[in-house]
Length: 126
Image (cartoon, rainbow, N blue to C red):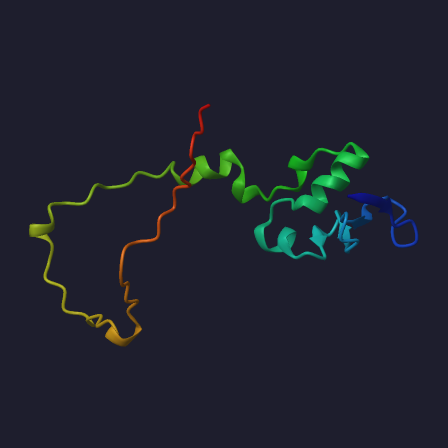
């Protein structure tokens, strides 16, 4: 990837133009706003490959751009609360709510043998 700082847009050098090689497709990355033209940075809230390229080019810490929800202290906070174990299912009250009925026409029909996912390779000895 080739990176160039967008001096016209940002004097703080936080907006970059990243060019993917060999396709030549260009993406604009705004680190301050946490936006990349590819869209992954905004959706996943973790740095995309273009953000990593900018951080490497400018010697910035990429971990700064990871959303707090992915950080260990936030995960620990979620599990700090006590969870009550479920009781024996035979003691649960009878469910009287709506029943789910699947549409049999939307069911995938698999015919024949399942597709093999292993790659067979032959060893040739002389």
